[in-house]
Image (cartoon, rainbow, N blue to C red; front, side, top):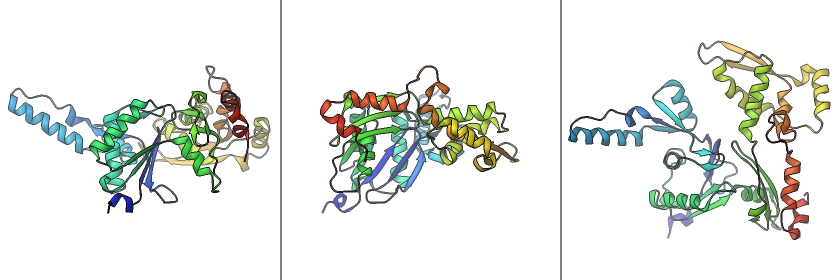
Length: 330
């Protein structure tokens, strides 16, 4: 009996900011880690020796140690902060794999260190961004089959999986518009009967990282006392824990002004260098952060089309017989 058929498939969803991984059938991912790799560059950049034999040995040991001495996720971030010899590499940029060597190392750690499974005993489900080139999919398959020797592989488009997860009934038409907001890229993707309408995909140059940067800018301009080296991380955590969207931005400003004690939150942290505690207020940025998608002119003068207008353009560019279903709201 084939072991892969009796064991759950491995699911790895690689994003620009975070990677979610686990096993098919689980309610939630087993691990959610930042998509980052820290490699010890001191082995890679060792000076070459003059003699041929020692030169070969130096190169060999440097290569072996470089293969072994690396970390991913939160561990990679902490290593780079505490040790200057570790360089951070972000394998995925704007939804596309940018560094295949780092990506391969990242998958290796995901499979062996986190999920602790034998890749030869499991089928694999990986995800990709809507506008990924076919060559990228081929290279992913090459790594999975030749390096990890997986018995089977399926690469799915992220918005299609998101749409499938939203259906709870067996009468699943799998038709709808998915707004896929990642850390590095935002796509509006029309899906009809489970298939992406590729010619109608719209891309927006504003994503999760831009929301973080805008919150960081707002807090800096208001004069909040946040350590500069910690400001981006604080802004990211504020975005993830306190931000929300509002239907009327003017009413929201008035609510905050009328009852500041109800709406203004407090953030408390520890200064990385001194270990001293600090605190700051979280005010208008709670709703102004996500507002960059609906009023992009408050963040950038280069892109000013609000998200609802982009969604409408996306549907209008789809085949006419699919538009009614794409506009439909469940």
